[in-house]
Image (spheres, rainbow, N blue to C red):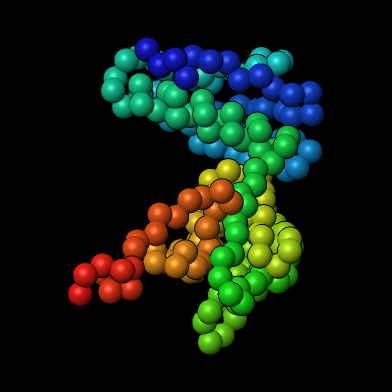
Length: 183
């Protein structure tokens, strides 16, 4: 019995949820998203809530039950409030510029790295070292933030690179001669 899958999803007043066949369309003030539903999962849409039920107790359907409920809940949250991830640049001379749908990063390479945002994603640069990636699709926001982090992964010796806001990088001590060990 899925505890997450049985929870109802409350729909805010500004959001509409429509079910057409096996497709769910969620529309709100920030945009609209759609999701294809597995035929073993049944979605019931009322005026103020959405209920997700499964047809039987097959292991695959039990696994999909909570997943589809959370995907729909993330869609409702995304079209009403939106999703965002914050990144920070650590390193001497590391900086970001741009905003909107284009981002330019200077992160220690011989050339600046340009990142073009797909449709539905917005960049915001604050203090030239903080980047905010925002949009309505939670998965896409997380994937774009991970792609930006992958450009310059934090170094384990000095901590230089791009990391999520508040992320802790455990540093290695380095060579024994540099840290005062016996030679």
